Amino acid sequence: MKSAYRVALVAFPGIRAFDVSVITEVWGTDRTDRGAPAFDLRRVATDSNSVPMRGGLALHPDRTLDWLSRADLILVPGLDDHLTPAPGPVLDALRHAHARGTALAALCGGAFTLAQAGLLDGRRAITHWNLVDLLRTHHPRVTVVPDALFIEDDNIWTAAGTAAGIDLCLHLVRRSHGAEAAATIARSMVTAPFRTGTQAQFIEHPTPRADRDADTLAAVREHALRHLHEPLTVAGLAARAGMSPRSFARHFTAATGATPLRWLLDQRIAAAQKLLERTDLPMPEVARRSGFGSEVTMRQHFASRLATSPRAYRAAFSSRSVTDSVAGGSNPIAR
Image: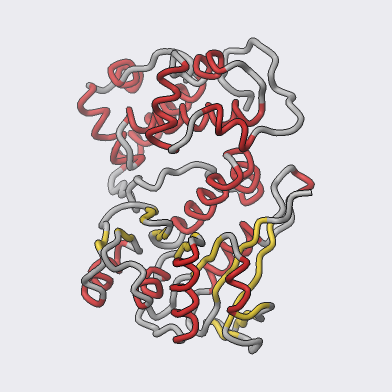
């Protein structure tokens, strides 16, 4: 039997309760009865003393820093005061973990902790949009990306504020256990299962006209999701929205944080991932149903976006029991 995926939550005074809750909800809840993988989440600190958090809350560690050597993934919550100095032993442990090749991920202001450890020097990182200048000022050797949800550089992940931490956590589940596992957790949390890290951090809709456009664009996206297996063009989607292609592309990007073509590609990759996990359909049929047209095109996009091939992805993440391989149906995946 495969051992549970080991996840460490690094705790010290000043960490944000919200980020602790996100990490605990994603990796600390047993959903194996719904087909989710087994996780072993441990709260790691310098000693066994309770770690105080804002609002009268406290976190009770169940492991010390030595346990980080066993972890598959180490998570650093954000901070209430973003300039809070982390304990020296914590910074040393994070440096040693990265040197061992363990994946590190920081939510929101947790990037400041990684920067204190020197782990972001010369690397790309992101934090909450309102903290970008602060991170640049106090850690000038970090290449701060101004507008993204989450990014990775040398096996170190950083995320923007609040909800982007959920996006990063679900992405890390998807990366290690597949799209279906991430979708199962997202459904349980009643949150969106798939937002790419390159999307904008926030989107403003300041007028009623913008709200109406958002409703129209939502209908167009729903249509596209139901017809991913068909040829879809920006001009065709724009016509359905009653806009010119240029106006449609501008409004679509403002509403989603991604261009129409980038959004379509993301959705087709997600559809192909689910088919590869859930079915034993041949590769040409997976490519057709997910809208790539050919196995070659699908393979090229998997290589560029996921750094793997469809066959390797299926071998890593396919379900043991295949129940959705029946042919037919107009939708690429049963919803």
